[in-house]
Image 1 (tube, one colour):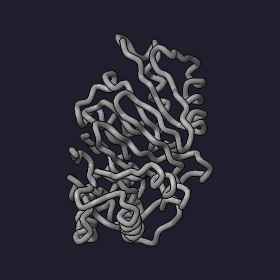
Image 2 (cartoon, one colour; image 1 turned 180 degrees about the horizontal axis):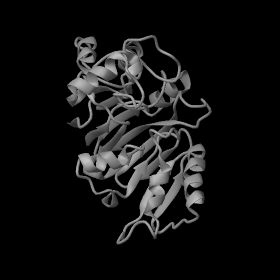
Image 3 (cartoon, helix red, strand yellow; image 1 turned 90 degrees about the horizontal axis):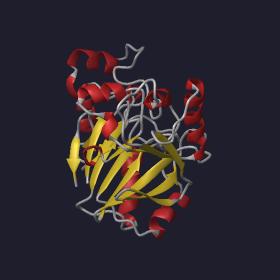
Image 4 (cartoon, rainbow, N blue to C red; image 1 turned 30 degrees about the vertical axis):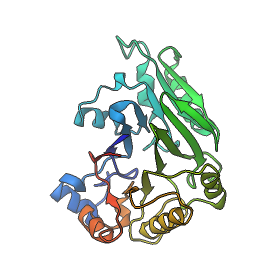
Length: 277
């Protein structure tokens, strides 16, 4: 599998829309990898997209992507930096022309409500152009050649309204954990029951080196998660670990995060990072 990080920030971006903190001022000056847009990824050159934030249009322009070619979208949760459904509604007739394929979208019931609201505001739907498929927590399902397992994230309302995912393809397994706090015992038991052995793990590190809170993780929780995975036999020395989804409130620049993780065998994600595993 191949993963491309189109965006790697929390909702406010780096620099944040309204902020003059040290991290944001540094990003404005240095630019490059210090600039972060809202979190979104592509798998296998567009075979599967994860999340659809307000920055999607920017990503299409920056990376020269044709969104009409993407026919599968997996959603983690309902926050606007992961689902900006108003732009999805522009796939309807009257806005879009010449589209011959359908976009299939996968997400939970709570997210479906936010999706429906955007289409109700536009007053039109067309399942031949775009269709939402509801998935449940701890469900195994298929998207093309991908076998996917959903887990309830420790995020949002903490009522199974946000998901993280295990994704399998061609004998490879990845664990995608954005946005979420540290996994619960129930989540660990599910992972252990399915005998996962991960080749790639993308970890929420919103708080970086600051004190952690329940809806996200920091470096300490990332390391605790890696230790638990090793203990349960879910990873080995070949597993690739990436920290992602950074907030400017975490207080660290990209270069400073590289130093914080320098002895931890974890890659610091940045907008445009590509990894094949």
